[in-house]
Image 1 (cartoon, helix red, strand yellow):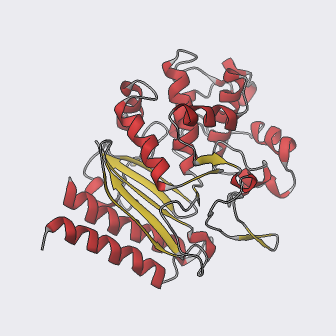
Image 2 (cartoon, helix red, strand yellow):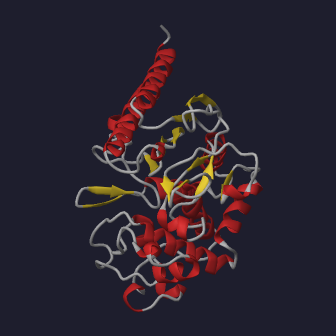
Image 3 (spheres, rainbow, N blue to C red):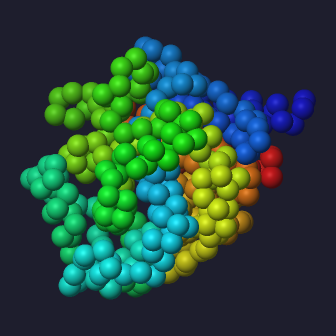
Length: 343
């Protein structure tokens, strides 16, 4: 048997096992490099009834951090609006946050907490302002704490520099490269096949963020809220790797610079492989592999020019519990098979 055909057969088997175990009702995988799509396929359904397709739109959750917020930061950095060690004092923050740097926010070393429960009491602009006032729990550079708050502060900085709404600025970058199906607030757009996620306030979420902060901020946030399909993510990543959206040196800087505190590794804006992470055993050999995951069951992992996009709506069944471990295991198996066979 052709070994590449065997790789794809194993990919199919692994993804279908997740459907059988009700980790997710369906999903899409795309494996490619900037020149070619090597394999793409959709599996299962979006809701146990309607078939998924390669055009199915998914809630990308924290992939927003890399596909929107980090790209905007890289672009503004390349245009000379700030440097990575600029402090938040330059952007109007005072007191306990004034010494935090852009680099700290991007590498989750700011000292800010992982999340905020303020969405239980506030929404909209009030919630946004309260989040911006969040007190740090540690001094900068002491610990790596993966934090959604960091990326909401980065959204604020992007809006302050560009004098545009975050989503308008991000979507203008996409439009310049004819990327039409990566966007915020897709529930405002008709005739899209959107994969539903969890139930909130008695209603199934379709086109509204599964993430609470993004949801109660009105669907637009720097930590989550982006929706899209695998083909559009492929186009965006290909342009990034080729140096079309920003000079290639900036993408390389963000995806190869590695910090390590207490044996936890991060890139700038991107996740780095760590033992037991969804990157898998093969990618864990390479410090300059890069990627990110999303709570809803989405992920991107790449090394050099090869990358894997895997999108599901795993929160359709459950948000926490065993499902989280199962999706991580499936990602590891997929990445081992694909990167182990193709690198």
